[in-house]
Length: 140
Image 1 (cartoon, one colour):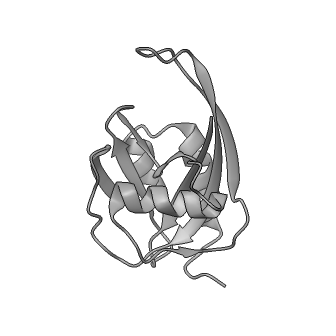
Image 2 (tube, one colour; image 1 turned 90 degrees about the horizontal axis):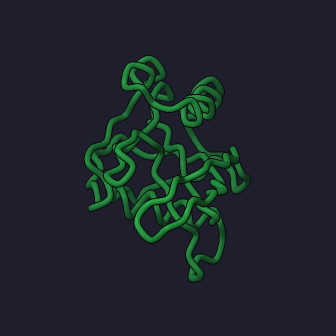
Image 3 (spheres, helix red, strand yellow; image 1 turned 135 degrees about the vertical axis):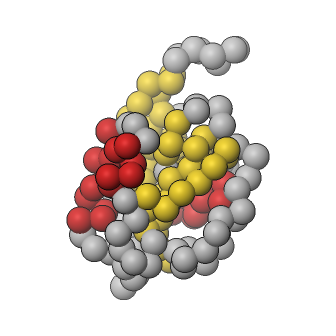
């Protein structure tokens, strides 16, 4: 499966938005499956962010991929074990309180130390480190 997700940077440039995913019980960046109606991968990532957080004022940092991750999802229910090819983009959003969707238990604007304290997986910490180190606070 191809998925698209977004690392959403706070305007202060020191924090990124992570969501506590209900099904996975993990803190991750917002994202999900690319749908047949998605015109672009960037658009798929933006759609998923909006669905999970209610944020609509997203500014892509660039239209290019920011990161790619491949992870294995174990067998669950009628779904066999499979891989997700996660195509990741970077966005900036205003300082807003997300309106979380049904797939999300909680959210937080986290810096790297807070993310590590929560036990966020290295597949999320690695790109988070990259994007926050670049000091991205506005789109070109």
